[in-house]
Image (cartoon, rainbow, N blue to C red; front, side, top):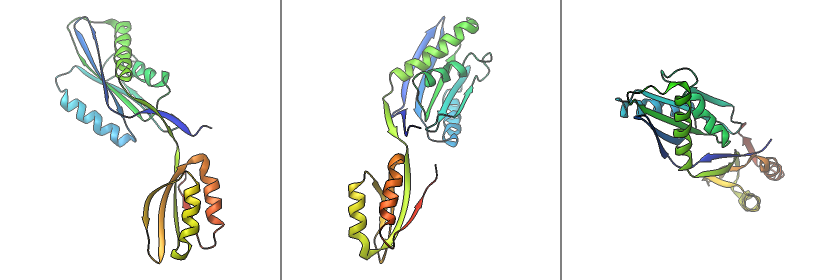
Length: 201
């Protein structure tokens, strides 16, 4: 199983127009369902005069948490094509919202599906896509006398120090790529007196 995933770094906007209807699209980096809920609330409030505010999102490195919402459009014509664009680029931790202003002419289900797909694609075309690693958090505590040994191992690894407190008892929180976590942990545990707690992903 790979320990990398692709996501976007910034909010990006797109637009698609068809027969007077205007589809404004927004690709947004998200981390969890609560963030998604807040964003939907916020966009519905901002675009209160729009006919529909449809969306789709995918979360998690495995890309197995997702949802698509048609917001009153015919079933499968909005959320699904939006989600299809996230999938086609193999992205995760991404939400796309498409706001529709109705232009007076019905587009039909085929026309709607195309419109939502193209609007979502346009937003992603303006987004910066990056590859990130799946990281694990490791909490360690140790006696201050062991600091040189511990720092030497951390320096040789690709771990980042997130937090640290130095006193008689030193406490550190490290972030390390998932595939490198077992090796780093085993090296640290070889130092007598180091206590480790690893988050489970």
